[in-house]
Amino acid sequence: MKVYGINVLGAVKDKQTRCEHYDKINDIIAIKFKCCETYYPCYKCHEEEADHRVQVWRREEFDHKAILCGKCGGEELTITDYLSSNSSCPCCNSSFNPGCQKHIYLYFEVN
Image 1 (cartoon, rainbow, N blue to C red):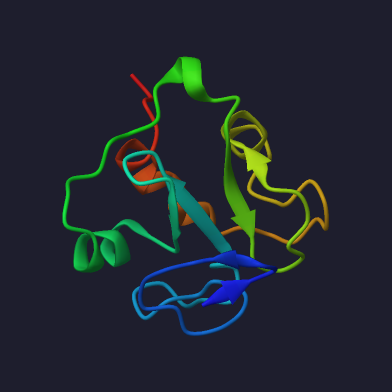
Image 2 (cartoon, rainbow, N blue to C red):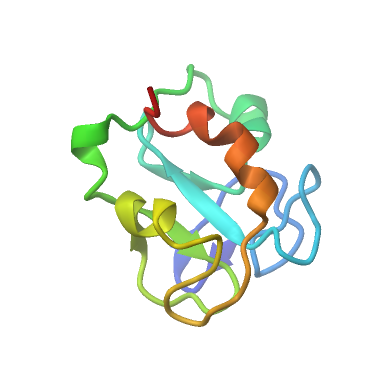
């Protein structure tokens, strides 16, 4: 599905990037996966569609733009911007799901 002109793959349910796995009101981000430079709403969507394993973004790559807010479609956020956002979009102040922090290690090097 195209979200603000960007392809978001996976089991996307709406233009705010919710998917069949995570579809609460604040599940509004898509993440660009390092391994394929492709946006998915979540790791489960990637697992179901991609033919390869996930590679996490390393700390030295946190300046890459890899987060899309499905609410406003503002600028793509860098990983650093996202991680320091206090679970809200710096462009539109919409709340992101704080539960995403439980899965952060699946996307970004955190150790």
